[in-house]
Length: 464
Ligand code: URP
Ligand code: ZN
Ligand code: ZN
Image (tube, rainbow, N blue to C red; front, side):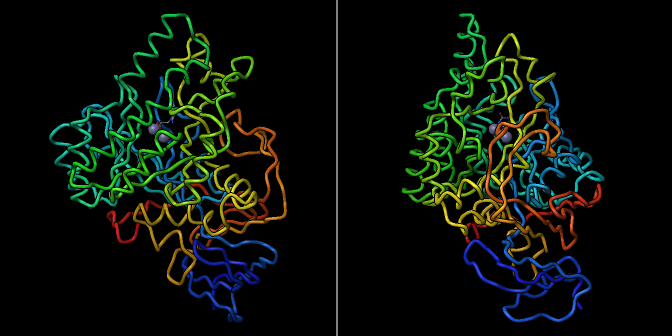
């Protein structure tokens, strides 16, 4: 007897689309059958809907001190929003504090998530102060189930690290099964441009974008990839890639045969720099790093998602309220906390604007929002798959419905939505987390604290 079965399911995975019944037992998928399964305590009829592996968002910043404030979603509100948007696993960034060990950062972040998260979670560590001891400690991270680290090439004076550190971390991390991720922008020149613009009295939100031109992202992306190549071809994952210059560097590295991976985000696929001209300080809503780019960049990113040059779509969910947080920079763009919300809209936007608009296939959509993140970040096939033995993290999506995105109806704990008023195709109806329904008829019905920390396996190029 199954605990739950899903009948009339049109299952969509990264490789196939087929009709089947799913049997779930003790939180796992027990059977995937093209015939009729035996009895279950509960049955969900998915007629007319798509059944997908739960979304995996490998780029979130919950309860994170940043830019003189703290991101507005904690692990409860942020994961409720994730669940309502079809995401059943997140990987959040544990930020190393000054003088802190990596394991202590992981413990601090675990304490933030425990008793709050409603979906499963893992962590990357963002290395902000890299000593010899930290380089040494990298060898123990995989043993904690934390198999990726992020380095910042931007945010000079706060988070930015040197090329030497980039090289040494890449070299050491790759030898210990840890994937290095980079925020690739040239922080030195951005810092100079930012100060110059402020000195000229150019203080509105649009000057945030002016201080971070795309060529500086291209330069840093190429530099990081060159350093990774020099570091014995260490695998490198470029987060939030936004522009053609960076894409050129990425594809060049891929052509020379190095393991180079990249993520983009819905905001870089769908929004452009005109947003910075929104009246009444509205441009501040889009102050994020890197900034929004041009339409031609969006098109290039869609092509790269289609071709496989870009592997995943993360949200970079880093929410700050417009009132009270973004307004910290009312008189100076450099004081606007960098980041925007997107944990809840990531998967629905990608469904609506990807396969529904013919930009990528349905299977590729599943791949970029779930399966590829699982493979690259050591979760596959436990997560990111619909197969016997996998966790029953499942999303049932109604393709024919539409919805209008609005901060008023989303669950993200933030007072604006970058896509306010946008009508999108499809709705997440039901979400299971390890077999337990946490979203039903589009409403959150789960319980605080039921999400579990997931230990991730070491990075494995044969799976990625
Ligand atoms: O503006 C952004 N992206 N804020 C979050 C931190 C980061 O750089 O990912
Ligand atoms: Zn970043
Ligand atoms: Zn980020």
